[in-house]
Length: 87
Image (cartoon, rainbow, N blue to C red; front, side, top):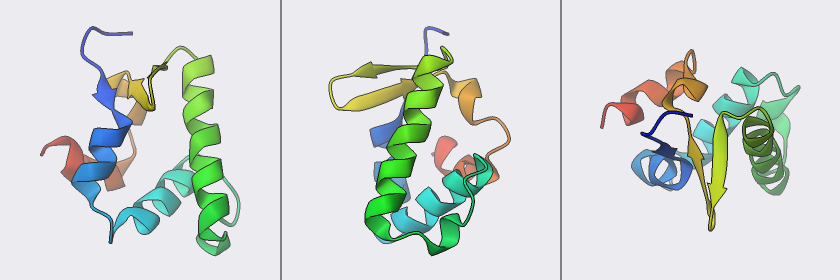
């Protein structure tokens, strides 16, 4: 992993509370989770955590306290994140 890590929690803060469910669903769709648009919100959050765990298992992230620090390249191709990565 690179020395610079992207905090998932900071990214969620940039997205904002109102847009977060849509952002999470877009993330799940990008990750190939079927029917992400119809999942209940609790299930969406569970699946987001599962996908973040997959990043950790693949060596693209590490857990630190209640956050996940991503290799910035982990989100390459996730266009919905682009405006928040530049912030």
